[in-house]
Image 1 (cartoon, helix red, strand yellow):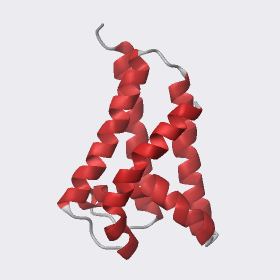
Image 2 (image 1 turned 90 degrees about the vertical axis):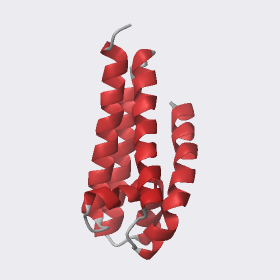
Image 3 (image 1 turned 45 degrees about the vertical axis):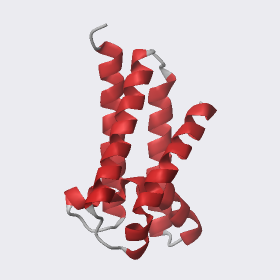
Image 4 (image 1 turned 180 degrees about the vertical axis):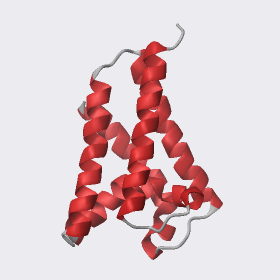
Length: 136
């Protein structure tokens, strides 16, 4: 499971960097940033598909814990006004997804962060179940 965590964190960095400028300033994302975020979600879908195809049952637990912890850290940091928690959590979990704001048309707030997390989590689960139960 530690390999999966390291892989996901390493994969998140370039997507977060692409979105960082708009995210930091609270600007609307560009089409490039939207495409990068969509690619990030597709990457999670493919990862889920691959893990489902390999029948790696721990993936569901890993993905659930990863995204649940991310959402909880963002919520805790946001509502407790703890920048030391919120900023790193937002950069790791919401940064790669900031471009989806281009498509969703919602303000950059905690609702957007949790909506983005939920969408990505859903896509990784769909990928897993398609990989697990698809035609062989």
